[in-house]
Length: 370
Image (cartoon, rainbow, N blue to C red):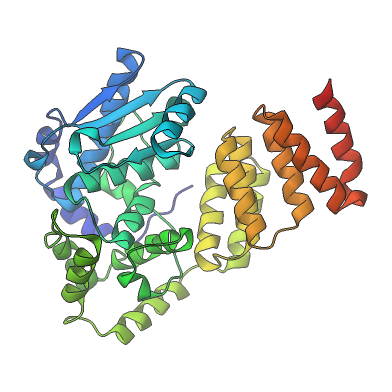
């Protein structure tokens, strides 16, 4: 269950003029390629609704778009993976925005069965923002992309801005302000920075909102970053920001509480709640392996095997037990139909901890050989 945060004032201000924007936002904003017209219409409806919500905050002029925003939808998972691999040389689960210098070539590519997942919301925002500001500061792009990824679409109701500002974020250092190339950890913590700046302090919110108008579509990411720093620097002492930020963090739950609540939510099958708790735990301790492992289990249960593999590997990189992770990767590969990968992982699990995993691994290996 999502929890309302302290952005009511800013949200209400935005909602005052939101209705007047809605009609303009629906003028040929998206060109959707899909197997059927019904799918194309449904995707277009979601994308236009998201556009309205995003632009309720950023206020970019849609007449500046030289071409519609391209969206390509695949129903078949292998066709999606094959297409993305041809473009990028790697596969990305769920959805991916592919950016080119030429606006007409840019496109958001979606796997239909992943339509409701956070990855789509994340990538849809990136497509929107980079259509107007091709090279934004990385913390701003990724922070808002993760922030908006809690937004889920229901075709039977209209999205509101209040829904967008419902998240449970914490724990970063403000040195992310000047970082253009961010690690996965920084992308997550950028979310916390955005949340802090939107969390109810009117001065911070005003400075952030005004800074949107200073971003240039012709500037590099570094130049846009320096522009934002120049906007904030005369108004706020960094030590004061840090103190306010620490006070903000003090109101948040501890890592142990988040992990416990995430585990309880996972045990009762409330995977969305569990996922939110574990993401919040990562914000506090980005190098702890446990939340990544549970996110892998959630992705596996949701049959998103690429994402499950990503999280299991992330957990191993942060110190999780190698035998446990290889066993999990083996189970995941079996479900994904990758027998050779499954066998390799199961052999490793049995070899690393035979007392715990050999019997289970050998039974699974026999089933694979049948």
